[in-house]
Image (cartoon, rainbow over all chains, first blue to last red; front, side, top):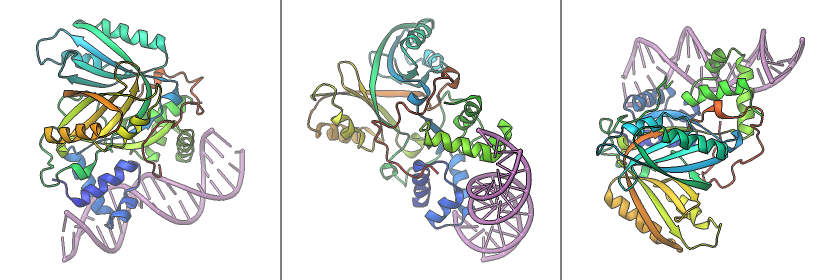
Length: 174
Length: 174
DNA sequence: ACTGAAAATAATCTATC
DNA sequence: GATAGATTATTTTCAGT
């Protein structure tokens, strides 16, 4: 259950996740202790999953973004290979999809040699049958933001659809 | 230019972007003021782009992840329509790609009705010729983390590839 | 669920090396 | 670049409502 106050807090955090508690309190018009309690509850419910930093891949030399579709031979519905693919550090996103290809991945690499190396890693995973690489010419939008005006405040709850099938490693969320 | 100390700082932030400065300082073995200065420099250089919160879309009722390929009729190399697509709030990612389709998008919606509405919005943009929607059955991995061991510390610089072509709205980064 | 007060920490600035 | 020290601000806990 999230209410209008939670929505305000989450919208503030979506703009800048490193903003101080005290500043959120000021903007929401509540005591900092109350904000702190709400944030912890949102974390406990799994609505807040993580605070992340977005680094500029190009500024770090990872100038190529690639989208790779992967076809595998697994028993229907199995995502074993997906978890193997998710372990590869160049791979930022792995989706198990309905359709001809089983997975779609996004990866960042420094150059075509690094891309070749990455594809070689895929090929080394048993069951990977085919890959189809698409070069990204322009990362036009990349955002974690959700439009909270689209979420039904009444039915938004903490139980369903939590961390299942997420291979991110954990660490203290605060 | 990032060095080994920056790398340590960034790796700590990649695990939890809301960690205190003082705690980073403790882990790195430096004075907090020095860490603060380095973080500000990383922000100024555009290496740190944003601090984001990852909310659980499913916990908020946005249970469907969809990948949509969009074919457009634009003059070659133009990404005008990409920016239009990026304005739509359900759309979290927009990539301009080499290949048969011009764009690949990722979007979150609550149900198939919301998906229909989203596709209708695409159709309303002049120049959008065709869309191909793929349903995501499992979001296996979604992460912003970059493997800093893959970045060449020597050549990683602040000049190239900064915010160009990014339609995220800005706000005080701290 | 929230507030307000108190104690503990942290952020930030200046001066200095 | 970094630190140490001073000041201001924030975080956190908790008693009270």
